[in-house]
Image 1: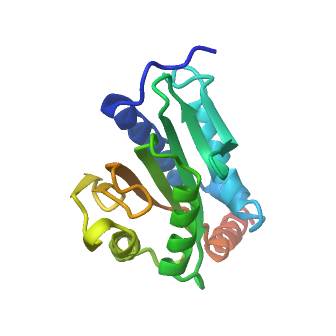
Image 2 (image 1 turned 180 degrees about the vertical axis):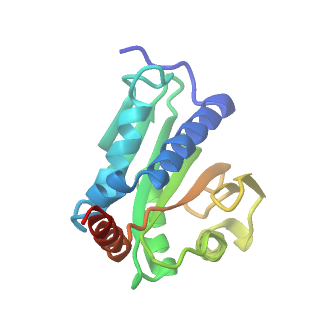
Length: 211
């Protein structure tokens, strides 16, 4: 296994682009969502593995470099890619359901992400799978942004870019835990709700047509 030379902006953009492509296709696949959402205990790991598997497969430039549920610093992180310049790309995934509090879920996952990086790991991701029936990506993003700002130096961001409309952003920030580190945080929000009632209704309609 040959490591890539460095985690730079080009490689980070490629990771973001690949994850966006994977998740965009999952959104269109009712069978993947049906299977992944069928057991609530495994939903997060199912989607994480979908992403990690494709990132780790040919023709991805990260083929053979991606690990899921891997140790880094204090604990295990969802997705990690190792590079030769001592930097690691680190990602945490989480599911948001109807009764979940966005700020509390985000704070827990962001703290976990920061706890599991070092002061070399400056390019990271929070990957959010929304299972709520009502999808409000901008509202969700604004609440995530506020959680991160509270952990930032002087309570503000250095920069904010929207990469894909209403789905993907990059926040640039310095946080209190690593005040010298300029951190690039990739935030992405994807709608993976599977409507069981609608699916059953469609089955009945199809059955009636056959009869």
